[in-house]
Length: 404
Image (cartoon, rainbow, N blue to C red):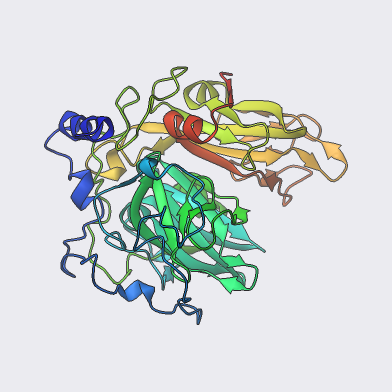
């Protein structure tokens, strides 16, 4: 047994019998639809959005260092099986949405992924995303893929249009640095979720355009967007939505699953951080526990001003059996503080909002001015990533660490 396999086996034992075994049931491949057969043609390899499978060698179905494929960008030995076969964790390809008023199955402090394009707001409950990991969607005419990796606690969204291609994504069943490896159904190239780039296959080296996404509480999003759209539990498969299949996984000192090598020793492996610098320029990580106490941090990343906010009260999806009873952590936001020609500075108030010192306007965690002279204005969101330290440091080994 290799070191990484021994490491992973110890990890599963350490979590305890209450966990649904990560290698086989993290998304229920043996659910009511029956076990997934890795040798059988997957339904999700059929054309989606009218974009057909291309006749090119597949990195999903053969070794990624096969000579018929471009040279992979990563060491093949660092890409490991997470347990389920391709599509054993089923992406949501035809998402349905409901209004906030129709939702009676989310508690006020449960996490949702918040996304807005051209004034159209969407919420993707983590209690659904934890079982599917990928939603292929279209928002305000923009084809998107919204992703969540439970093993890294990483939520990111990307545009699906790449040049002349309209890609759709599935869950490959592989992991890289313990992170979700996606595959596109058109070329079956493999994509690193945190990097947003193809690491093996026909599209090796190509990068997806990132779309900002926030993890906030259901109540924060619902109050801000009563007319928005919420991903429905009607996904086409039967899953125990609301339950956490990764019981106790977010203990800071525990080893990550299927992670080879040694995590950066500056913090405990699964200490939560907020990462900035998604293009790889000036990567910066802020310790979430410190940020939660300070609530407002202004800094410069790659020469640009950024203000980072935190509000307590968000439930961890990776703690207790029921997501609705997970321990409280902090919801975060990152924004460009320049509005028009004025750079604003902020302070936290005694509640869940923030006040700019220039006009006295009050702002919510989603970057919207809700009272004062600037009411109705919105700060430009800056792409950031709430994740575990081991994952951020693995993909950004030269990151600076800020402990506010």
